[in-house]
Amino acid sequence: MDSLITAAARALATGDPFGALNHVALRDDAPALALRGIAMAQLGDFARAKVLLRRAAREFGAGEVVSRARCVLAEAEIALASRELQWQTKALETARAALESHGDRINAAHARYLEIRRALLLGRLDEAQMRLAQLDPVHLPAPLRATHGLFVAGIAIRRLKTQAAAQALHRALGAAREAGIPALIAEIESAGKLLIAPAARLLAQGHEETLRLQDVETLLSSNVLVVDAWRHAVHGGGRILALKRRPVLFTLARVLAEAWPGDATRQALIHRAFRIKQPDETHRARLRVEIGRLRKTLAPVAEIRATEQGFALAPRESREAVVLALPEENIHADVLALLSDGESWSSSALALALGDNQRNVQRALDELASEGKANSFGRGRALRWMAPPLPGFTTPLLLPGLLPGV
Image (cartoon, rainbow, N blue to C red; front, side):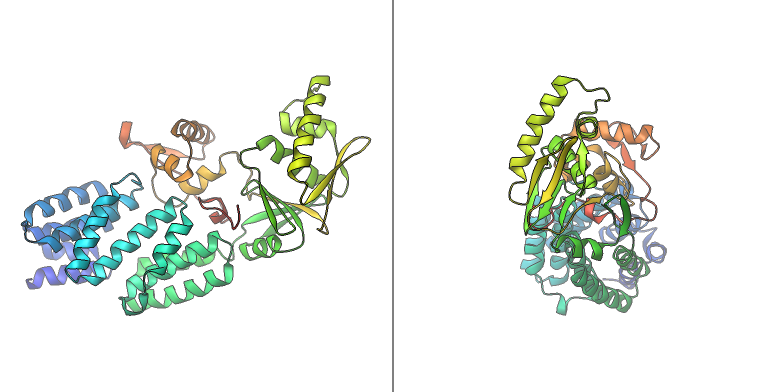
């Protein structure tokens, strides 16, 4: 490898794409094409980067297995950065196997971290954690140790283990500073802010309080009946009752919890659950049916008692009932959470990450766009969507991946 290629590679390793281009911008040999592609990716020109990397892969001879595998690895990283989650994972697995068999331990580990990143984007926390446990970062270079810490923290945050997340981020920040890569340091510091930013609202007895992630963790582990608007579930007595697929029952449970220790009127329950302002006897009959279903569902953690005006929630083992609400009430908050990560998403990638139908996601995007909360650019298959972060709030609880037991 000549001195210019070596210098360009070192510049890219420290996050200096312009420095790398100064060395190889005018060269068209395979190593230079590959480095130019990586530099363009670091600058955000993913389309040009993919073209250069594919040219480089073709230029490398059939015997240059490791170099070709590295090109595939770089292209896979670009696919994840541009949220092309349908990218063929088999190619990445093949490249990783080639790198491992030829002793390129560092790039093979990098390939495994890309597999973990994809699992996290899709909310597959168990898969991500299993893959992460197979990697020992101790002997890896500082940038990969920092990446390892970021992934450990990402899983811990989504599972509301804030102390473990803070420790992982501390280790990651130390590794990033050792690597001296400003973008990596900034990413870890930004992740650390999630632990101290407002994450949710607590609604209890007519009052509202802002909670951080640690407060949410404490609340969900306490002896309190929690109607959780993040995951559409009810927590109580060590149980988690999922109501995500039963929106009417969840809405009724929320209205009852908001009214606790008093009762919720039939009028209020019908209005919130059925969106009917002027109910008649048919709506009251439907309410009785749905309350009966909710009473059966919540039986392990609470009773629902009929009152003169309506119904009241009576926790069995809990001291009180509260609602854990979103920082900003929006019917498409889960879509907003993904869009606000600073990257551009296609509707198909969003549907894959959320486990939803693409038509439903497209309708959500259209509604968000009409409200000025999402922006699109491009056309046809190149259409992408972005949104600004929710101001002053953190969104990890909205990202794909379930809380423990849900």
